[in-house]
Amino acid sequence: MGYGLGRENAGNKTATRTVLLTSADASLRARLRRELTAMRWEVREAAGGAEAMALLEEQGAEAMVLDSVLPDLEVSEFAGEMHSRHPVMELLRMDGVVDEGGARSPRRNELLHALRQAQEDACGPRGLGESAVWTLAPVTAPQSSAADRLAPGDKRTCAAQEVSALLREHNAGVETKRPVQATFFEEESMCLWPRALPVPLPEMVGESQGMLELARLIRLVAPRSTTVLIEGETGTGKELVARAVHQLSTRSNKPFVVLNCAAIPETLLEAELFGHTRGAFTGAVQSRMGRIEAAHGGTLFLDEIGEMPLALQAKMLRFLESGELQRVGDNETVQVEVRVIAATHEPLQQRADEDAFRLDLYHRLAVFPVSVPALRERMEDVLLLATHLLDKLGEEMPVKRLSAGAAARLMEHDWPGNVRELAHVLERGTILAEDRREIARDEIRF
Image (cartoon, rainbow, N blue to C red; front, side):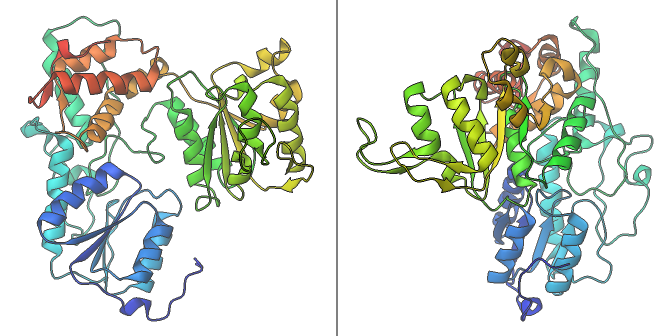
């Protein structure tokens, strides 16, 4: 496969006691970095495959820890390319695939120990009980069935086991509006890292049917330059969807420029989008490039597109049709190549029917519409999302977990503010819990 990087002497580059963590999951990298730094490893990090290749070209590594999902490259092909380019570097894959005949670091036991410690950190302080013990199979062992690698009769992931334990503790207690349930999935491959769920895309947490369908649509449209319209309630994570489309596209190494159309006064929005020349209006003391031009070659994300004034919509439509823009106060046109992703919490087609939004612009934007489900429509994802968000909070403060009562209280709520509200509730609960490792039921406040 051709990634476009030179191979001259690449296989001979090795930096001893240096490990490269390759994952889009910042929380995963942080936990591994903490463990490995304590063992005096020099830790380097890459959020994707292309970045990892560039780092290895600059300086080799004794070992690489490779996540099971990459935002920009297919993991198996990437691993094969790394084995070809750097045959003396050990490659530890978190999806359990064994690199038969690959290099072995003289300190591989330290790497495995760090992975085990990181696994325990992710599972949290709560014991899972004798019937729910996760065993970490060494990567050199022959592959066995998932059932052999887990305790007898148990085929759930670490986080799912933790949620199950919470729900069992709560079986004597609080009445809820809806049953407190969790959806589990069977583990099909050897896993060195316990995830809260099989993450379909970076930072997008959920195994409900709606989220899996959303992930499928993102993967379908990402490689193209098609205009995407993201619809969903406030707080559902529309910008995360836009970033996932950008990261999985061929534009991932180009700019991702964000403009919230509702956050900028109407009188300044045109200049912010298209740019302006010096003296074009009062206060324009120098020329300035607009957001569209700044995104050249990359992706422009227009949040709350429904708030764009009608007069400016006509200019936006012309740009989408021709790829040309004209700065405010300038007579010259500029050709810009950019992918546009728009988002709205309003029903744009209905607004177009009411003449509050241009119908022709709506059709230009909605070439590929995707809908982000509200949190109340995927309640099976709430506790998995909570685990993910608490891990992220743990990057700045001690990691906390939910008590059984707190977990049940989360499941009682209808979440009008969606994932954003859940993140705020958990941050509040983390603060109220003070030095305790668990968040109690009465510390979940809406």
